[in-house]
Figure (cartoon, helix red, strand yellow):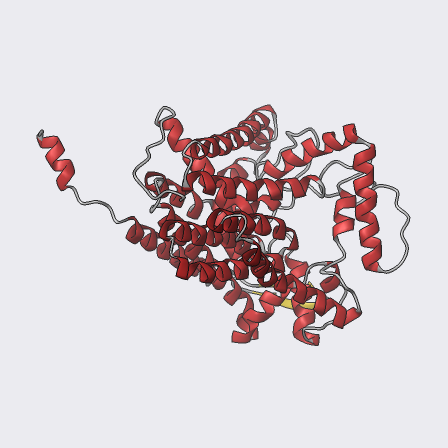
Length: 464
């Protein structure tokens, strides 16, 4: 045996769990310092001054704060319209944070979101390291926890960070269950995941589709098709309880039997002869005769938009293409898709320190970033990211074990959210909830690519 081999055998094996824990805590501490150094300011909410401190205002920050201010003033059954138009889940989360002190509510929210994010990345990667993907886990950890947009979103007002963390926690729990195969713990893990997915739907109802897909797939793989029915029903009851509370809140408040009334309006903005696929303030929509209550009108808009897509397949696919580009576009969108559309991430905390933002701050830099060179790099960024994601999926799919199933869950969650954007509005902010999983697949693709297409697999547990 060579001396080199002997040294390799004697070298200590790195404890990934300890490494991940150390860095997860370290990232949280750094965010702690940022949070307590954010300069507060006063904005106007419902015609009143509102002091914001310890957190940045996200894309819909004013709307969430308006809802929170109404809940804080009038109680859970506030009649303020924004709580019926927008899902009231996230404002209720802020209200929960205020129980520790109203003056600290937003700072507490930033601390909570940051802690959950670090915990979710730690849980996901430590379980990943127990599979044959151990050699991928370190790169996955680095790409996710240090992704500027994803990690800094936890210090901004918005549901995106908590939902991204939630999906990582759910997949981590599933991984643990599939690895341990402990029948005594399955029901416990099922309840935990159902609660987490319910909370995600509570903050953003459209995520329920991905949640149902994840849960049903996991139960069938774990228990078989015949024995799955009772577990699926039990999980759905727990999961749907949370969005159901929003319906109850709206019913008690204003007699509205719906989570919100903005689905039809949002879908209508993204449809019609003049739609560009993104947010518009005028000239959008399809003809629709509206009658009855707000809930009925919202349902009528949904049906009108679906009918328009079916009647205009060529225009529909053209819009689907634009919405796809907007969904996966860079954070600094320079109109490379054809239309000048910036999305709703202008308040992305990363843009405060992004070198590209600094380059574009003067005329020569702006000409570079928003000119042909910038558009070329934007397309390369978009296409390479998608290529790596699908390549990573194919790498895992060929493993035919736990790795294949996790790849299915990851891509299923990603594509379900992507497809929802196709029938509503294309916006790069909507991909933040699935960024942890897309970065996971991209990390697998990237590392395999550098290994000349040979994934560095190690021994690990099987699915059965």
